[in-house]
Structure formats: structure tokens, C-alpha cells
Image (cartoon, rainbow, N blue to C red; front, top):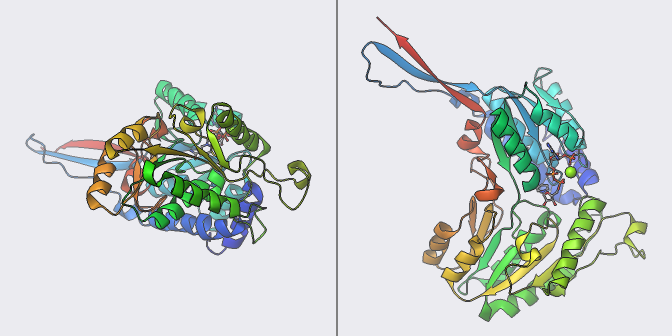
Amino acid sequence: MVEANGDELAELESLDNGKPLKLAKVVDVPETVAHFRHFAGWPERVYGDVLPVHQDGMLCYTRKEPVGVCGQIIPWNFSLLMASWKLAPALAAGCTTVLKPAEQTPLSALRLGELALEAGIPPGVVNVVTGDGETGAALVDHEGVDKLAFTGSTEVGREIGSKAGRSLKRLTLELGGKSPNIILPDADLDAAVKGSFQAIYFNTGQACNAGSRLFVQRDQFDDVVSALADRAGKTRVGPGLDPATQLGPVVSAEQRQRVLSYIDAGRDQGAELVVGGGSAVVGGGPSLESDGGYFVEPTVFTATDDSLKVAREEIFGPVLVAIPYESLEEVAARANDTDYGLAAGVWTRSLTNAHRLASLLKAGSVYVNCWGEVDPGAPFGGYKASGVGREHGREGLEAYLETKTVWAKLG
Ligand code: NAP
Ligand code: MG
């Protein structure tokens, strides 16, 4: 039903979030479909074990049971897709759920709720409750909720995590990132530039796994930065429903302000602005306000100081910080010098370097000669402040199951 109503869902997502309709059609909708299809296969594969315990005459077995009622809170960057990441495993495990979309982007989740009813899911199993952070907090605090699943900022994630610690609710968190993307000297540079561009500007930089810190070896640094700046300068920024748009607006005035203040901090602290840096003017209007869109130019900074705010904090907008390095060991240490650990990337033609870095980098996903690949069966989640637990596949499903051990004395 998601597939059959895909055009409508894509349009709702574009209207709510501002993302290009094309993007919603080729990414958000099909990946949502794939997620439900994947988890639709799990219910008949959820089973326990019979255990060879040491007691005589004892049957000992485990049952996998649904954890119970889930409180699921999602952000505004991929509303429909995040709803599927939450609902699909919960339903496959046999849980009921209350889903709260972000206040900026409730439409696709509401439509998905209607589709769930039309599909025959009994009323009360999938519940969509709109509201802001207060509604989210009420869900987190509710005694009837057994398990919390949250995707969003690290700040709110810490708050929810500490509450779950007190109430001992089950918990998974998918939080922010400041993911390092490393181009080694032996990389296919054209592919690396193309991939690194997508890594940061996909969804206007509003992706938790955005490749926002780009490390380039000193000898290639200027060439790579100028190729990226060239692409950024040619990118068509515009409204989501305009088919010519390559980069949509950010989600809200508040988010634009947050991104622009990071750009100011970059300038103030001495990062060099190579391209972009302002509110993009779209449609020939004299100011953004008159165009009614929250546009930000694709922006590239260069910096040599890893401690700058733009090099350390999650910006969640179309802002890249490129940083030169000398050696592989050095770049691995600098890449890991962050509170976050969601994703990391390596561009190289050397198998040895690829797997060496893949083992050194402290991140939940490492992309080699690609960026942002996902599959409903491949675990996704963060080290350190990027989260707790994993979504997708068996590990994602386990987060919605309790294990019960049954001891039966047979005589
Ligand atoms: P956020 O506050 O973490 O919002 C995420 C979700 O949590 C929303 O549904 C939000 O509701 C809800 N929420 C807010 N406060 C809550 C609380 N105390 N208890 C329970 N739920 C609560 O994120 P944001 O303010 O929209 O964005 C801020 C920054 O977060 C971004 O700049 C970005 O750095 C990061 N972010 C990360 C991701 C990600 O995918 N990891 C996604 C979005 C944003 P309302 O928004 O409706 O109030
Ligand atoms: Mg918010």
C-alpha cells in the first residue's frame, strides 16, 4: 500500500520537509517499502531454543516474546522512512506502538497510519500521535510504555536515555554524528569527489550520517577542494516541488538560523570559506523571506584546526569542512577524535588500506568507496554519543523482543 500510494507519500514528504520530490520518490518511498518487506519476512523466523541444561529430566527452552508497548519518536529529516524503521520491526515482533513524528513533518506518518488501518492492522496497534517535544516527553514518561526508540539530536537522546535509565524501559537511540570521510592518496579522485559531494549534500546535509568532515591528504587537498567547490557552486538550489531543484531548503527557519550561525562561527574562528556561506536567493527575489523558503547555499570551509566548532559539532545542513592530513595513522586518530561514531568513509584503491582503516575507525558504519549505503538487513547505529543499540535486520528486531527462559521438570 505504501508502494501504491508512493506518489502521494512522496509529495507529502516534499511539502512538509522541503526535500526535492524526485529524492522522495527514489529514496524515501522505495526504502520505506523495502523496510516493510524485509520485516514482513521476520515473524515466521522469530523462535527460541531448546537448551541442553545439566539438570536431569528438565526441559529448558526460550521463547521470544514482544517487548510490549513501544513509544517511538522520530525526526523531520526522513519522516516516512524513519517511521518505517520504527514500525516495521515493532510489528514483526508483535508489539503495539505509539509513534510521534516531528512537529515540522507529521503528514506522511499520519497517512501511513491511515494506510495501516486500510491494510487491516487492527485499530490500536499502530497509533500516530502528533505534537512537539512535550508530547514526546509524555510518551517517554508514560508508565504503560515498555520500550523507547528515538531518532534525533544527541541532546534529546541523552535526556530520554537518562529517563529510561531511571524507569528501566528498554531503549534504542539513533543520534547525531560528525562523520569523517577520508580520501587516501591512492583513491580514484573523480569517484571520491563525486561520492564525497553526495555524502555531505544529500538531503541538504540533513542526514545523521552526513560525511561532514572531509580529510584529504595534503598533496591532493587543493585539487579536491576546488573540484568540490566547483560542483557546489553549480548546484541548483530551489523548492522541493520544482523538478529542476538539486538541493532543497532546510526544514525550517529555526534550522536555517542554526546552520547560518555555524557558518558565522566558522568565519569568526578563522576557517576559510571557499564557496557558499549564505542564504541562497531563489527565484530572483531580493531576500529569502520574500521567497518563503529556508535556503542555504552549499558551503565548503577549509580548516587546519580540528578543534573549531564547525569541525567538531553537528551542523545538520549543507556545510562541509575539509581538513588536510599527512599520514594514514594520523588521520585515523584525528577521525576518531570526536564524541560521535555513527559513520566513516574511506576512498582508496588499496585493499590493505581500506580494511586497515575499516578496523581502526570507531563508527557504526564504515563505507569503502561509497557513502550512505543502507539495507534493511544491515545493522545501522552508532558508537559513543551517536547512539545505543542497532536498527535493521536481526539486531534491530531483537530490540523489540524479550527472551523468556522456561524450566519444566518432567518427572
Ligand atoms: P530533536 O529535538 O532531537 O527532535 C527529534 C524528535 O524528538 C522530535 O519528534 C521532537 O519533537 C522530539 N523531542 C524533542 N524534545 C523531546 C523530549 N524532551 N522528549 C521526547 N521527545 C522530544 O531534534 P530537532 O530539534 O528537531 O533538531 C535539532 C538538531 O538535532 C539538528 O540540528 C540535528 O543536529 C539533530 N537531528 C538529528 C537527527 C538524526 O537523524 N540523528 C534528526 C533530526 C535532527 P518536536 O521536534 O516535534 O518538538
Ligand atoms: Mg524539535
